Image (cartoon, rainbow, N blue to C red):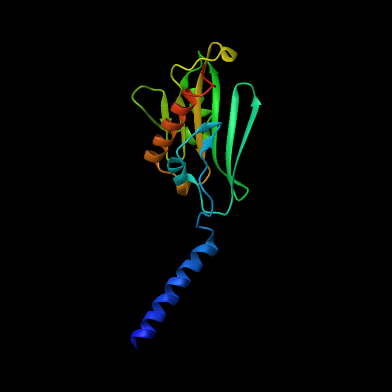
Length: 173
């Protein structure tokens, strides 16, 4: 084979690989969101949990006064769910964990207020007070839909950063 033929073959092989990837939906054609539940998050921390796709949308709802839900959808399918949950002070943290399905068998931090797995986390927002939620504690939670995108160390970082941002928000006064 000539040098030109080898070069042409290499170019065609590379183009075929790129075309194959774009057909599977594995490429991300959108930017990771910069906000969850109205607080800034580092898109680089959220990005590992988002699948390939063309579009991303972030929706917020408050189904009850004690809960704020934020859902990240990629191409119309939920990818990540973040929540702010006010729980009564006397509720055991294990109850909060079991109410969040991705953390039922979670690793636990030394101080007992942070539970996480590769696909979910629950963390207490220490020192957060809000007159609308007297005698309640605020917890953040994150759940990832695709278990193939989960990674425990990355979840721990995302959850800690999200919780810190919530503590600095107007949710805590």
